[in-house]
Image (tube, rainbow, N blue to C red):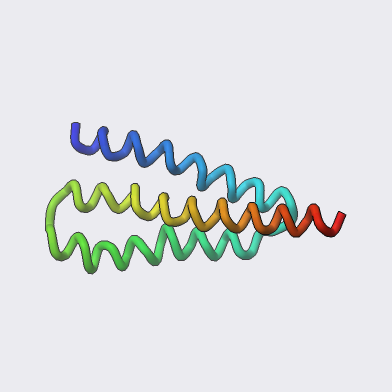
Length: 92
């Protein structure tokens, strides 16, 4: 039940990350979203495991990794898309 509670909210946040990445690629921006996903979903998770999980050693602290990595990545991706889209509108 603990895992379901944490992951249910995490998947809602994951939708923002996935949609903003796809939207950025749709306007021709693919390199930066890819780098942001690698940093947010891979590098951040490794750092989390060696810091937060190493400190607490609990399963919830491991599951919360998804919530935080997807949240950080979502915010970065949405911000990148908003700025890229505004730049595109100015050019048109």
